[in-house]
Length: 439
Image 1 (cartoon, rainbow, N blue to C red):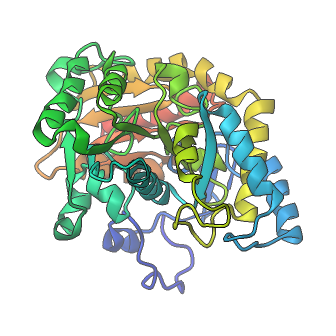
Image 2: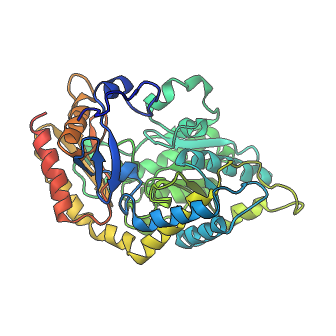
Image 3: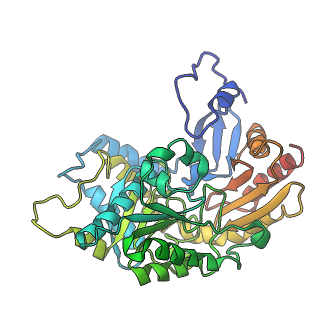
């Protein structure tokens, strides 16, 4: 599908995480969206198999969010975020905390998942300093982890291409756990793999190496998304929690992708029964409508900052657009939708349909693995002579045939809408099967 406006200059826009030259030579442009579909420039419909970018699980342009943002824009466009507030920010913080695990009752707003991660890392370091343990300054991430693109997030992240250009300027005092994926042991697992729980013990090795008294926080995605859907092995997250408790280390769950229904609950604790000390979230917070992120913290962390004179700033950190009125309006409408339309329950009920559709690709030529949890799934293709080429070819041909599928190198990634039915999944996977067999 070519750019219909031949006079449009595509050069000035430097696109994120995109092969710019390839895209601008053959653009894949959309001009509107509704429900499960994008509309391309030529008027054709593009079925979205990724619900935006993990963002829009309740559907594009949901009328309740459209109405809420329109009303807010006409009433209060912006309010200073420092030393001034507006009611919607406090209401949204309360609504989000009501969904959080018990004991997590405080919310700091950011504008993205990347900002939420850097905020969480700063809060963790500040918390230990205020407790008189400023020597706890080492952060532990995980190989293949994705925690956004700010310097803190890249430092604790473990995706090599994101790190290599900036390696000399990343944060010091960072180490990484090994990732939990093993193709030989886990291939074609449905849900949590049985093998791999023992890998949590690698945290004890880092404790011994650095001494636990120097470790501030461990940050992991409960289900690693951007790297290609790496599902935690049975017992892994629980073991991390136990080791962190043993050594006084904070546990941060990066739930930018997994929160708000993506794995069938408000937060991952609903599925895994593990409560972290800090949660980062974004994406589904506003159903992708307006950029917004948040950091949720346990009460004892918040209270540690609330010492000293009452008129003193407790945390010298924040953003011009923290708790932006339009984002809050979108977030409040999203919370209403999630509650009133039973969205999380809907997502949970569709997991089996999704899982069966994904795993029907077992045995298809060049498919070397399939993995899934909740409404997150991946089909991994054998690489060709040029790694990533096969996945990108499937992505581009899918768009040409009216389907948006994300590829990360040779891993096809799926993040369907929460209310998809069997017909929705049939359309997606019939098209993907046909294209895999021909590309």
